[in-house]
Image (cartoon, rainbow, N blue to C red; front, side, top):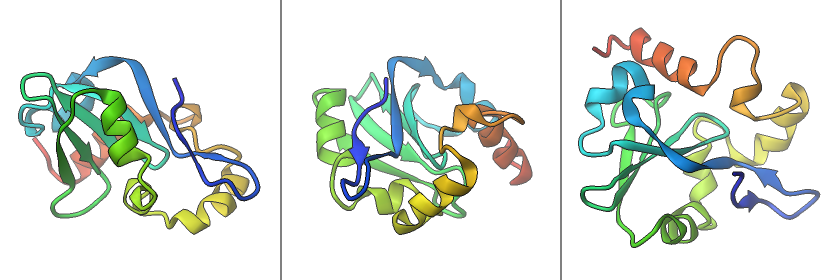
Length: 141
C-alpha cells in the first residue's frame, strides 16, 4: 500500500511505503538484535529509512541504516498507525529527515536519473539486501 504523497508542485512524489501487514524485524538481518523492543517493520522511505513498531509499547521508531552515528529516532506512542502517519510521516518537515541523505529539493532530479525511487525495483537487490550490506560494512554483528 503506498501511503501519503509528498509535494504538490508539478506532480506528487511518493516518498514512503507503508505495508498492509507488518513484517517481522528478522528481515533486517544483522540489525535485528539492535532494534530493542521494535519487532515489526511497518514500512520504508524512498531512500531506505525503515519504520518500526513495538506492539508491546505501541511506540514507533524510524531507523536510518545509511546514517552514521545515532541512526534511529523514536517518535513515541501512538494509538494507531494512522495517527503515526498523520502526526509524523505527513508532517511538513519530515521529508528532510525521511529522505536522508537526499535533500527533498533534489528528489525530482534524482527520480529523473533513476526512473523510479522504488527501492524494490532495483536489479541488484532490494531494501533488505541494501540494509544488510550497510550493516555488514559497519561491522554490525
